[in-house]
Image (cartoon, rainbow, N blue to C red):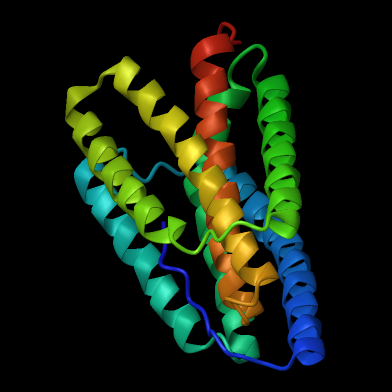
Amino acid sequence: MVPTFGNSTSLPGAESSAVRNRVLRNTYWLLAASLVPTVLGAWVGMQLGFSWFAGSPLIGVLLFLGIAFGFFYAIEKTKNSVVGVYLLLGFTFFMGLMLSRLIGIAVGLSNGVQLIGVAGAGTAAVFFGMASIASTTKRDLSNMGKFLMIGVILLIVASIANIWLQMPALMLTISALAVAIFSLFLLYDLNRIVTGGETNYISATLAVYLSVYNIFSNLLVLLMSLFGGNRD
């Protein structure tokens, strides 16, 4: 859901390989670290009864997008310093707050905790599957980005429209497409790191985090809609 920020540079073979491995390793470490403030943000949001869209859904969505893209801009400007890391972690805390309402609804179901676990396991399976493909494929995936971005824009438009339409079938369709699109985005972004198209681990982590976040949240929506038990 964010343009991939990258530095495409041509380096000698051995040096280029070392850079790619370092970026990939640092990305995985920072991604793991980013899950901590996400969980903390979700917990804080549940404790405070945080509900961003309670008053006006449209204003809530626009405000969320404004804050999110503000973070994207700030992270891009500071991606070569430690400030970028702190901003990224602050952003993931914010995203945890945004996730808290969905988690709260899930926990309220009789099998909600199990569904959260299944969504987490499913997200992990997608991540490791895409990482494996990204590391081994010989295909050029560089052209995927523009088509995936168009798909994300269409998802945002459809999601905003469904605020008024309130169509369960459309919600399920959006969530299913989101899981598919962000799984492919995950493959695309990881492949860019592996092939040297992305040389900044903070930018790489932001892109990968957004895909993982959206896969998990939309997978949880699907599971709740299809298999959610009665409310406790």
